[in-house]
Image (cartoon, rainbow, N blue to C red; front, top):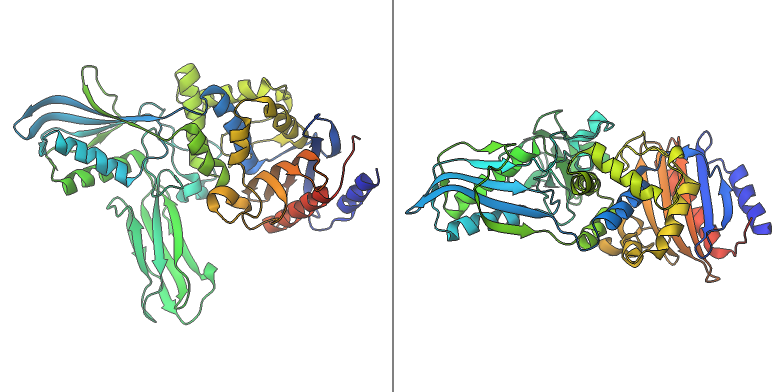
Length: 459
């Protein structure tokens, strides 16, 4: 009990979160007994700890070996080297598609003998509905990669799989000149306005990258120091399916295929088309690594819609969230005290009590796929991004696997600790109403370090 009293004293005297709220739950990983609870039954915003629920539901419904597919279909006929008809690219929710995949699709058409297309390039993204942004997304977040549009046909700039975004690499120019930049993919679908200037010295925050609301004009403003490191930014694209088509048409042209007609989006592929290629994504087990390690929002929302499509044949948030709730309830979680609004945790209307989250983390340990899920959680202090993830700079030397979470005023951390005594615990720390989110990380690390060093007993 002395240990618990010390923890209570730490919490009661803590001034770092003055005016904020702490929800803390600690359980035995072996028995599920609660060792400690502070506001454990109070509903709080989980931020990206919501991704734990999404990953659990996806593994339970779709399975670790699940793969997304993308199809290339043809309608018409080949006359010499001319395809007299339309080419369809049919998206079914793959969040891992990159530029090289669309270039490969173009090469396949070239090998098929096509050098000219008289019809249209038609993007079929109807596997999911046409609601692109979750209803609780803050409008200013829609310009950034973590608030990007959700479409069944999308494009990621790299293997982080930040769907529906472009990457901008910025480095200092000559003194007094604008900084240099590269856009990837190098697409004409977005426009860069570079109003920044290279100076002797500037703080990192003096260089600002923004995107116009509901448009694709990206602004680089402010100052960059001449000796400053390369800056990388990922910005969301408005009209993601059109962005895909634009990229695919560009790939076709570079491959030596010309298109006569205009491209089109949002149309269902008609019956009778010929499928000439099916592209398969990595497995769900592989996709969950960047989803959990890097806290990838786009993957989370696409998983929600995919679950809705898989179970109810409706690629919508409504259907997908229904599936999530059903699966989480199957573990005995009290759904009457939860509010689930999305799959990523970006919504400020998600509400979870810490005790319910630790209950879920305890119960899933019996699942066959649990070791896989455990490995998707960021590992404290490991520098490799795809191992340490969002904990790679924190709590080095501690045996902690846990999911981080951050939105405005919220910092969270939930997962598993192997103590110095070899005792294993499940924990959830939910900090809300913070003025400084970084203070939340300090508090989390202090609590976890304290737990790591002490043996606990049932309350």
